[in-house]
Image (cartoon, rainbow, N blue to C red):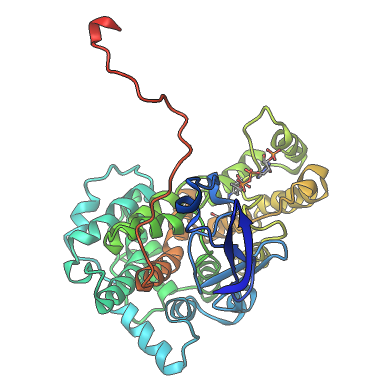
Length: 425
Ligand code: CMC
């Protein structure tokens, strides 16, 4: 909404819009028509790409709110199913609503049986994210009754299907790489307990879900559920703005999340900790991260929006301790991570650039203690972020002002010239 103030650009006034909290924005929609000029903002560091009521981040204060609720409170008291309902519907569910929602999600956990043969087309050493991109994109070929994006009911069914099927898809990707049989979902288990069983269970034995691991993983899912207009969410929105079906849009989000600057950082962070190996080697890696001529960066450190401690990293660090204690595991890499954080936070380079641990810094230590191989880390991120993606996608499609996303550019290529025949070049 406009707040009555405006900013002059050239000889015209441009209205200033205020949200419920956070920075105001300048409404430049008429700028090109009025001036013939575009704005230039590669990386969107100063651009609000949409209006949204889902997630709010105050990067300077290290605050993350989902529908107004602080992430720390949700991680402490809520469940991933409840947070999913909250993101999709705007309010926390009462008991009946939560039970109904969980029931609905549980009833969508199975995959079309033919998709099992689709997995067999991949090499056994395929990265789970490669498999996830392919399988999720392929869902649009299997669930034709939920691809009409103009029908709110079909949009809801597609959203439920994606949230429900993602654990099955991720677990099957893992089982395929290790050559074990796929394990079908079991509806008596929780969302997260079911995922653990499909990942680590085998048909030959009864799988007993460890409640501490189940709770920790559920909390990790909550921490990853949504994060405002990050790269993969913006990818989902941009893909969806053309009217593409939801399965195709989420496949696009998975592809974007894979990169090491985004969701792939959890895998890269643990690989980095392994490479460092011992606390004595930390100074060498800090020096490398500071060296302008060395492309190395401290993975799991720094964030586009947080210029303070990532509130998700705080919960994650606490959860590492709980999981290691519950599983009676001592992981020397956790000590390396703690000491690396301590040294980096005292270093002028990291202080000046406001680089703090992000959500990915500690998650790898927990996931590895639970038994996940590093290649599965980003797949777990994708699983959890699916709810954010579908909630953001639904919000966009429901917006009457929604139009196709079509950025412009500052062209620096050759100006018009005449074609030259090949023998004259
Ligand atoms: N280690 C060393 N230096 C860093 C780091 C780092 N991890 N992150 C940023 N810097 C430096 C960077 O070199 C630059 O220095 P200068 O101004 O002298 O050129 C300055 O800090 C600003 O960095 P930037 O790349 O311009 O900032 P950005 O907002 O474009 O990038 C980031 C944010 C997350 C991509 C970056 O901090 C990074 O590459 N971190 C490591 C990867 C990582 O942990 N990613 C997970 C992000 S959180 C989970 C998610 O959202 O997916």
